[in-house]
Image 1 (cartoon, rainbow, N blue to C red):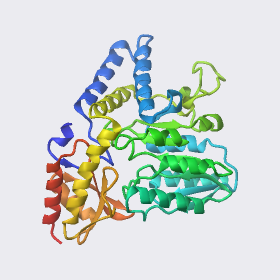
Image 2: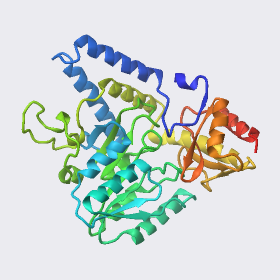
Image 3: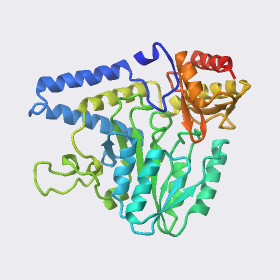
Image 4: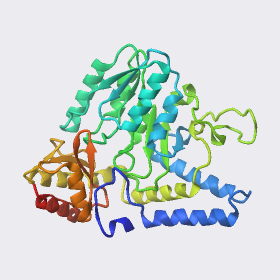
Length: 381
Protein backbone atom coordinates (compact mmCIF):
# COMPACT_ATOMS: atom_id res chain seq x y z
CA UNK A 1 0.00 0.00 0.00
CA UNK A 2 1.94 3.05 -1.21
CA UNK A 3 -0.22 5.39 0.88
CA UNK A 4 1.08 3.77 4.08
CA UNK A 5 4.76 4.24 3.22
CA UNK A 6 5.13 7.77 4.56
CA UNK A 7 2.40 8.14 7.18
CA UNK A 8 0.71 6.53 10.14
CA UNK A 9 -2.84 5.94 9.00
CA UNK A 10 -5.98 5.52 11.12
CA UNK A 11 -8.68 6.61 8.64
CA UNK A 12 -9.94 3.29 7.28
CA UNK A 13 -13.47 4.29 8.27
CA UNK A 14 -13.21 7.19 5.83
CA UNK A 15 -11.23 5.58 3.04
CA UNK A 16 -8.85 2.66 2.93
CA UNK A 17 -5.57 2.91 1.00
CA UNK A 18 -5.59 1.05 -2.30
CA UNK A 19 -3.16 -1.91 -2.46
CA UNK A 20 -0.77 -2.03 -5.39
CA UNK A 21 -2.22 -5.32 -6.76
CA UNK A 22 -5.67 -3.70 -6.85
CA UNK A 23 -4.32 -0.64 -8.64
CA UNK A 24 -2.61 -2.95 -11.10
CA UNK A 25 -5.87 -4.86 -11.62
CA UNK A 26 -7.60 -1.59 -12.47
CA UNK A 27 -4.98 -0.42 -14.95
CA UNK A 28 -4.63 -3.87 -16.52
CA UNK A 29 -8.39 -4.15 -17.05
CA UNK A 30 -8.50 -0.64 -18.48
CA UNK A 31 -5.76 -1.57 -20.92
CA UNK A 32 -7.54 -4.78 -21.93
CA UNK A 33 -10.77 -2.90 -22.60
CA UNK A 34 -8.97 -0.42 -24.85
CA UNK A 35 -7.11 -3.17 -26.68
CA UNK A 36 -10.33 -5.06 -27.34
CA UNK A 37 -12.20 -1.86 -28.14
CA UNK A 38 -14.48 -0.25 -25.52
CA UNK A 39 -17.63 -1.00 -27.55
CA UNK A 40 -16.95 -4.07 -29.64
CA UNK A 41 -18.27 -7.59 -29.61
CA UNK A 42 -14.92 -8.78 -28.28
CA UNK A 43 -15.08 -6.71 -25.08
CA UNK A 44 -18.38 -7.94 -23.67
CA UNK A 45 -17.11 -11.31 -22.37
CA UNK A 46 -14.42 -9.45 -20.39
CA UNK A 47 -16.97 -7.04 -18.95
CA UNK A 48 -19.39 -9.83 -18.07
CA UNK A 49 -16.64 -11.92 -16.49
CA UNK A 50 -15.30 -9.00 -14.43
CA UNK A 51 -18.69 -7.96 -13.05
CA UNK A 52 -19.81 -11.55 -12.48
CA UNK A 53 -16.67 -12.42 -10.51
CA UNK A 54 -17.21 -9.49 -8.15
CA UNK A 55 -20.93 -10.23 -7.77
CA UNK A 56 -20.13 -13.83 -6.83
CA UNK A 57 -17.39 -12.72 -4.44
CA UNK A 58 -19.71 -10.29 -2.67
CA UNK A 59 -22.49 -12.87 -2.59
CA UNK A 60 -20.17 -15.18 -0.63
CA UNK A 61 -19.27 -12.40 1.78
CA UNK A 62 -22.95 -11.44 2.18
CA UNK A 63 -24.08 -15.05 2.54
CA UNK A 64 -26.76 -14.59 -0.14
CA UNK A 65 -27.40 -15.66 -3.71
CA UNK A 66 -26.04 -13.43 -6.43
CA UNK A 67 -29.58 -12.54 -7.49
CA UNK A 68 -29.76 -10.52 -4.26
CA UNK A 69 -26.56 -8.53 -4.94
CA UNK A 70 -26.62 -5.22 -6.83
CA UNK A 71 -23.89 -2.68 -7.53
CA UNK A 72 -23.99 1.04 -6.78
CA UNK A 73 -21.57 3.96 -6.75
CA UNK A 74 -21.39 4.23 -2.94
CA UNK A 75 -23.09 3.25 0.30
CA UNK A 76 -25.63 6.08 0.20
CA UNK A 77 -27.04 5.10 -3.19
CA UNK A 78 -26.96 1.45 -2.11
CA UNK A 79 -29.24 2.38 0.78
CA UNK A 80 -31.40 5.01 -0.89
CA UNK A 81 -32.22 3.60 -4.34
CA UNK A 82 -34.12 0.53 -3.10
CA UNK A 83 -35.51 2.48 -0.12
CA UNK A 84 -37.23 4.98 -2.40
CA UNK A 85 -38.74 2.15 -4.44
CA UNK A 86 -40.69 0.60 -1.55
CA UNK A 87 -44.50 0.97 -1.39
CA UNK A 88 -45.07 3.87 1.01
CA UNK A 89 -48.40 5.19 2.27
CA UNK A 90 -49.08 8.52 3.96
CA UNK A 91 -48.80 8.15 7.72
CA UNK A 92 -46.20 5.36 7.67
CA UNK A 93 -43.48 5.83 10.27
CA UNK A 94 -39.74 5.66 9.66
CA UNK A 95 -37.83 4.73 12.82
CA UNK A 96 -34.23 5.98 12.55
CA UNK A 97 -31.48 5.41 15.10
CA UNK A 98 -29.76 8.49 16.50
CA UNK A 99 -26.38 7.28 15.18
CA UNK A 100 -27.11 7.21 11.46
CA UNK A 101 -24.97 9.00 8.89
CA UNK A 102 -26.36 12.39 7.78
CA UNK A 103 -26.54 11.29 4.15
CA UNK A 104 -28.99 8.48 4.86
CA UNK A 105 -30.91 10.59 7.37
CA UNK A 106 -31.34 13.38 4.82
CA UNK A 107 -32.66 10.89 2.26
CA UNK A 108 -35.19 9.57 4.78
CA UNK A 109 -36.40 13.08 5.63
CA UNK A 110 -36.89 13.93 1.96
CA UNK A 111 -38.72 10.64 1.44
CA UNK A 112 -40.96 11.52 4.39
CA UNK A 113 -41.65 14.98 3.00
CA UNK A 114 -42.67 13.66 -0.39
CA UNK A 115 -44.92 10.86 0.86
CA UNK A 116 -46.30 12.32 4.08
CA UNK A 117 -44.38 9.92 6.33
CA UNK A 118 -43.50 10.39 10.00
CA UNK A 119 -39.99 10.26 11.48
CA UNK A 120 -39.33 8.77 14.92
CA UNK A 121 -36.03 8.04 16.69
CA UNK A 122 -34.40 5.02 18.33
CA UNK A 123 -31.77 5.93 20.93
CA UNK A 124 -28.55 3.93 20.63
CA UNK A 125 -25.86 6.63 20.90
CA UNK A 126 -25.58 6.22 24.66
CA UNK A 127 -24.84 2.48 24.48
CA UNK A 128 -21.12 2.50 25.26
CA UNK A 129 -20.70 -0.79 27.17
CA UNK A 130 -20.09 -4.39 26.13
CA UNK A 131 -21.75 -5.82 23.05
CA UNK A 132 -24.12 -8.31 24.76
CA UNK A 133 -25.50 -5.59 27.07
CA UNK A 134 -25.92 -3.23 24.13
CA UNK A 135 -27.77 -5.90 22.17
CA UNK A 136 -30.25 -6.45 24.99
CA UNK A 137 -30.80 -2.72 25.38
CA UNK A 138 -31.37 -2.24 21.62
CA UNK A 139 -34.04 -4.92 21.54
CA UNK A 140 -35.75 -3.58 24.65
CA UNK A 141 -35.78 -0.04 23.30
CA UNK A 142 -36.94 -1.22 19.91
CA UNK A 143 -39.89 -2.95 21.52
CA UNK A 144 -40.90 0.36 23.08
CA UNK A 145 -40.21 2.50 20.00
CA UNK A 146 -42.15 0.39 17.51
CA UNK A 147 -45.70 1.56 16.84
CA UNK A 148 -48.58 0.15 14.79
CA UNK A 149 -47.52 2.50 11.96
CA UNK A 150 -43.80 1.66 11.87
CA UNK A 151 -42.84 0.58 8.35
CA UNK A 152 -39.05 0.93 8.40
CA UNK A 153 -36.15 0.77 10.83
CA UNK A 154 -32.83 2.35 9.84
CA UNK A 155 -29.97 0.95 11.92
CA UNK A 156 -26.27 0.74 11.06
CA UNK A 157 -24.45 -2.53 11.64
CA UNK A 158 -21.41 -0.85 13.18
CA UNK A 159 -22.12 2.68 14.42
CA UNK A 160 -19.83 5.07 12.57
CA UNK A 161 -19.36 7.47 15.49
CA UNK A 162 -19.28 5.44 18.73
CA UNK A 163 -18.04 2.14 17.26
CA UNK A 164 -20.77 0.07 18.93
CA UNK A 165 -22.01 -3.11 17.23
CA UNK A 166 -25.74 -3.53 16.58
CA UNK A 167 -27.51 -6.94 16.75
CA UNK A 168 -28.86 -6.85 13.20
CA UNK A 169 -29.98 -10.48 12.90
CA UNK A 170 -31.80 -10.36 16.25
CA UNK A 171 -33.43 -7.06 15.30
CA UNK A 172 -34.60 -8.54 11.98
CA UNK A 173 -36.22 -11.41 13.85
CA UNK A 174 -37.89 -8.96 16.22
CA UNK A 175 -39.27 -6.91 13.32
CA UNK A 176 -40.64 -10.07 11.70
CA UNK A 177 -42.92 -10.48 14.71
CA UNK A 178 -44.42 -7.00 14.31
CA UNK A 179 -47.84 -6.83 12.58
CA UNK A 180 -46.41 -4.58 9.84
CA UNK A 181 -43.15 -6.52 9.57
CA UNK A 182 -41.21 -3.24 9.08
CA UNK A 183 -38.40 -3.18 6.56
CA UNK A 184 -34.86 -3.15 7.95
CA UNK A 185 -32.38 -0.81 6.24
CA UNK A 186 -28.79 -1.34 7.37
CA UNK A 187 -26.03 1.14 6.62
CA UNK A 188 -23.00 -1.16 6.44
CA UNK A 189 -20.42 1.46 5.51
CA UNK A 190 -18.27 0.50 8.50
CA UNK A 191 -19.00 -3.23 8.34
CA UNK A 192 -17.92 -4.71 5.03
CA UNK A 193 -14.25 -5.59 5.30
CA UNK A 194 -14.04 -5.02 9.05
CA UNK A 195 -16.44 -7.53 10.65
CA UNK A 196 -18.28 -10.70 9.55
CA UNK A 197 -21.38 -9.54 7.66
CA UNK A 198 -23.06 -12.69 6.30
CA UNK A 199 -25.63 -13.16 9.06
CA UNK A 200 -26.65 -9.50 9.10
CA UNK A 201 -26.64 -9.06 5.32
CA UNK A 202 -28.82 -12.12 4.84
CA UNK A 203 -31.28 -10.93 7.51
CA UNK A 204 -31.66 -7.28 6.45
CA UNK A 205 -33.98 -6.03 3.73
CA UNK A 206 -31.45 -3.51 2.45
CA UNK A 207 -27.78 -3.93 3.39
CA UNK A 208 -25.86 -1.09 1.75
CA UNK A 209 -22.07 -1.04 1.52
CA UNK A 210 -19.14 0.72 -0.07
CA UNK A 211 -15.92 -0.78 -1.32
CA UNK A 212 -13.54 2.09 -0.58
CA UNK A 213 -13.45 2.00 3.22
CA UNK A 214 -12.53 -1.19 5.10
CA UNK A 215 -12.32 -3.22 1.88
CA UNK A 216 -9.52 -0.92 0.68
CA UNK A 217 -11.01 -0.89 -2.80
CA UNK A 218 -11.32 2.02 -5.23
CA UNK A 219 -13.73 4.86 -4.57
CA UNK A 220 -16.79 5.00 -6.79
CA UNK A 221 -18.08 1.45 -6.31
CA UNK A 222 -20.47 0.06 -3.70
CA UNK A 223 -22.96 -2.77 -3.39
CA UNK A 224 -26.19 -3.81 -1.71
CA UNK A 225 -27.71 -7.08 -0.55
CA UNK A 226 -31.51 -7.07 -0.85
CA UNK A 227 -34.09 -9.37 0.71
CA UNK A 228 -36.40 -11.52 -1.35
CA UNK A 229 -39.41 -9.40 -0.38
CA UNK A 230 -37.67 -6.20 -1.48
CA UNK A 231 -37.08 -7.83 -4.86
CA UNK A 232 -40.83 -8.49 -5.05
CA UNK A 233 -42.20 -5.28 -3.54
CA UNK A 234 -39.78 -2.50 -4.51
CA UNK A 235 -39.73 -0.75 -7.86
CA UNK A 236 -36.72 0.98 -9.46
CA UNK A 237 -36.23 4.67 -8.75
CA UNK A 238 -33.37 5.80 -10.97
CA UNK A 239 -33.70 3.84 -14.21
CA UNK A 240 -31.23 3.09 -16.97
CA UNK A 241 -30.29 0.40 -19.43
CA UNK A 242 -28.89 -1.87 -16.72
CA UNK A 243 -32.24 -1.80 -14.90
CA UNK A 244 -34.11 -3.50 -17.72
CA UNK A 245 -34.02 -7.14 -18.73
CA UNK A 246 -33.43 -6.49 -22.46
CA UNK A 247 -31.43 -3.32 -22.90
CA UNK A 248 -31.92 -3.13 -26.67
CA UNK A 249 -35.68 -3.57 -26.61
CA UNK A 250 -37.97 -0.59 -26.09
CA UNK A 251 -40.62 -1.36 -23.51
CA UNK A 252 -38.59 -4.14 -21.91
CA UNK A 253 -39.48 -4.96 -18.31
CA UNK A 254 -37.16 -4.59 -15.37
CA UNK A 255 -34.87 -7.32 -14.12
CA UNK A 256 -36.65 -9.58 -11.65
CA UNK A 257 -33.59 -9.67 -9.41
CA UNK A 258 -31.45 -7.03 -7.70
CA UNK A 259 -30.14 -5.67 -11.00
CA UNK A 260 -33.29 -3.56 -11.34
CA UNK A 261 -31.57 -1.13 -8.93
CA UNK A 262 -28.48 -0.78 -11.09
CA UNK A 263 -28.74 2.19 -13.42
CA UNK A 264 -26.34 2.64 -16.31
CA UNK A 265 -22.68 2.62 -17.32
CA UNK A 266 -20.15 1.93 -14.58
CA UNK A 267 -16.37 2.00 -14.64
CA UNK A 268 -15.60 -1.70 -15.14
CA UNK A 269 -11.90 -1.50 -14.11
CA UNK A 270 -13.08 -0.54 -10.60
CA UNK A 271 -14.80 -3.93 -10.36
CA UNK A 272 -11.48 -5.66 -10.97
CA UNK A 273 -9.82 -3.45 -8.37
CA UNK A 274 -12.38 -4.17 -5.66
CA UNK A 275 -12.34 -7.88 -6.42
CA UNK A 276 -8.56 -7.82 -5.98
CA UNK A 277 -8.86 -6.05 -2.63
CA UNK A 278 -11.42 -8.60 -1.42
CA UNK A 279 -9.10 -11.41 -2.44
CA UNK A 280 -6.23 -9.81 -0.51
CA UNK A 281 -8.43 -9.63 2.57
CA UNK A 282 -9.42 -13.27 2.07
CA UNK A 283 -5.73 -14.13 2.11
CA UNK A 284 -5.48 -12.60 5.61
CA UNK A 285 -7.91 -15.23 6.93
CA UNK A 286 -11.62 -15.62 7.43
CA UNK A 287 -13.80 -12.67 8.42
CA UNK A 288 -13.67 -13.92 12.01
CA UNK A 289 -9.89 -14.24 11.94
CA UNK A 290 -9.49 -10.76 10.49
CA UNK A 291 -11.80 -9.34 13.15
CA UNK A 292 -9.67 -10.99 15.85
CA UNK A 293 -6.62 -9.19 14.45
CA UNK A 294 -8.48 -5.89 14.22
CA UNK A 295 -9.91 -6.07 17.74
CA UNK A 296 -6.56 -7.05 19.25
CA UNK A 297 -5.19 -3.80 17.83
CA UNK A 298 -8.21 -1.68 18.75
CA UNK A 299 -8.09 -3.07 22.28
CA UNK A 300 -4.40 -2.15 22.47
CA UNK A 301 -5.22 1.38 21.38
CA UNK A 302 -8.21 1.61 23.73
CA UNK A 303 -6.14 0.40 26.70
CA UNK A 304 -3.27 2.77 25.99
CA UNK A 305 -5.69 5.69 25.70
CA UNK A 306 -6.74 4.99 29.29
CA UNK A 307 -3.22 5.98 30.31
CA UNK A 308 -3.33 9.34 28.49
CA UNK A 309 -4.37 11.77 31.26
CA UNK A 310 -6.53 14.04 29.07
CA UNK A 311 -8.08 11.31 26.91
CA UNK A 312 -11.42 9.60 27.42
CA UNK A 313 -12.70 6.82 25.20
CA UNK A 314 -16.36 6.85 24.19
CA UNK A 315 -16.67 3.10 24.69
CA UNK A 316 -16.42 2.06 28.33
CA UNK A 317 -15.18 -1.39 27.32
CA UNK A 318 -12.79 -2.41 24.51
CA UNK A 319 -14.50 -1.81 21.15
CA UNK A 320 -16.06 -4.74 19.25
CA UNK A 321 -14.35 -3.79 15.99
CA UNK A 322 -11.77 -1.34 14.69
CA UNK A 323 -13.43 2.02 15.48
CA UNK A 324 -11.91 3.77 18.51
CA UNK A 325 -13.54 7.12 19.29
CA UNK A 326 -12.29 9.34 22.08
CA UNK A 327 -12.14 12.90 23.36
CA UNK A 328 -9.06 14.85 24.43
CA UNK A 329 -9.30 17.62 26.97
CA UNK A 330 -7.89 20.91 25.73
CA UNK A 331 -7.56 21.46 21.97
CA UNK A 332 -10.55 20.93 19.71
CA UNK A 333 -10.72 17.66 17.76
CA UNK A 334 -10.12 19.62 14.57
CA UNK A 335 -6.98 21.16 16.03
CA UNK A 336 -5.73 17.75 17.12
CA UNK A 337 -6.26 16.35 13.62
CA UNK A 338 -4.27 19.26 12.17
CA UNK A 339 -1.40 18.91 14.65
CA UNK A 340 -1.15 15.14 14.21
CA UNK A 341 -1.39 15.50 10.43
CA UNK A 342 1.60 17.80 10.53
CA UNK A 343 3.45 14.85 12.08
CA UNK A 344 2.23 12.40 9.43
CA UNK A 345 -0.35 10.78 11.71
CA UNK A 346 -3.86 10.71 10.31
CA UNK A 347 -7.16 10.24 12.09
CA UNK A 348 -10.37 12.30 11.89
CA UNK A 349 -12.74 14.42 13.92
CA UNK A 350 -16.49 13.85 14.21
CA UNK A 351 -19.21 16.39 14.92
CA UNK A 352 -21.77 14.26 16.77
CA UNK A 353 -20.48 13.43 19.26
CA UNK A 354 -17.67 15.97 18.95
CA UNK A 355 -14.68 13.67 19.23
CA UNK A 356 -11.73 12.02 17.51
CA UNK A 357 -11.89 8.66 15.73
CA UNK A 358 -9.00 6.32 15.00
CA UNK A 359 -9.44 3.06 13.07
CA UNK A 360 -7.32 -0.08 13.33
CA UNK A 361 -7.23 -2.57 10.47
CA UNK A 362 -5.28 -5.71 9.60
CA UNK A 363 -2.59 -3.43 8.17
CA UNK A 364 -2.19 -1.48 11.42
CA UNK A 365 0.84 -2.25 13.58
CA UNK A 366 1.60 -1.94 17.27
CA UNK A 367 4.25 0.61 16.32
CA UNK A 368 1.53 2.73 14.68
CA UNK A 369 -0.44 2.73 17.91
CA UNK A 370 2.61 3.60 20.01
CA UNK A 371 3.39 6.53 17.72
CA UNK A 372 -0.18 7.85 18.00
CA UNK A 373 -0.19 7.57 21.79
CA UNK A 374 3.16 9.31 22.12
CA UNK A 375 2.01 12.09 19.81
CA UNK A 376 -1.19 12.59 21.82
CA UNK A 377 0.81 12.76 25.03
CA UNK A 378 3.09 15.36 23.47
CA UNK A 379 0.31 17.73 22.37
CA UNK A 380 0.14 21.04 24.18
CA UNK A 381 -2.97 21.47 26.43
